[in-house]
Image (cartoon, rainbow, N blue to C red; front, side, top):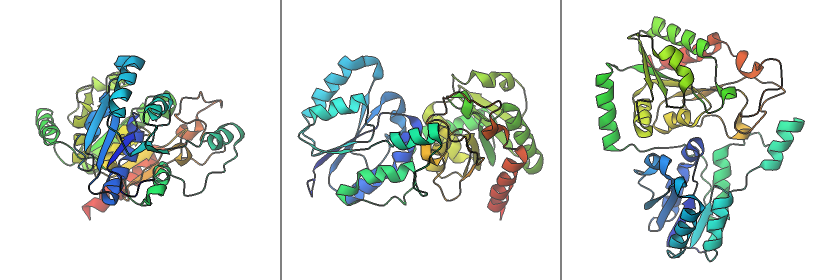
Length: 344
């Protein structure tokens, strides 16, 4: 391993949550190598997350639509850059193919705890260490570089244009600070807390604090359509109306974000907003859970959870107790502790 590398390439193509959690490594790399060229390769749809990160020299993007042919073309281009260190934080087929093209570079690769998770999901044998977090696993990869500061938390730097556009959206939608954001979304249905319970939670927040509640969602979150049509000045629905960076900028303006285990939830604390994350079939062993000092998770301690890495495994019990047993009272109690604490 070179003591003074001049060019470093980091790859983590997706997904949103993994990329957000990994962001502290760029600060750590820059502090360790202040003059090095630190490049990062990411999928096009997540580009806005890191295009303003001051610790990255060049943000390289890959369009998945270009397929394997496009990937090979990009690999040849990157091979000509003669990187000294290749940090593979994705460890999938694409990143391994790229590693072949960059075989002259020193390789650092993230190893997913697949065996540990298999034992946990299917035999309920938990051999994870008690202080396991996904972020600490990312920092383990950097240990040969004498980087071990896993105390850092995720961070996203917003562009001036995103902040300006968001200010305009808030004016157009007649949204006033302070407000609370609800992220009742998740790619997998098993990770979604009850919409009706979210509605009850919203009602209590409005009743006690007289603030607006903003519901954020994307074009795939069609299950929110049943409630987004209601006209209520205290409940604002922004479903498929904002880009990724605009959504994150809205999170940065809110007093509190409450959401499911999804990437956008973790983006909230990456821009300095307290987060309450509701965990169902996932847990810290799967990479879930907040990192910020003002953030909290709400979860049930059950023998059957966690049951899958992404929350995509069908629940094999009669009811999904991991989410159904979480009451609105429990969540609202945490909401009060955060909002009342801010007032003080």
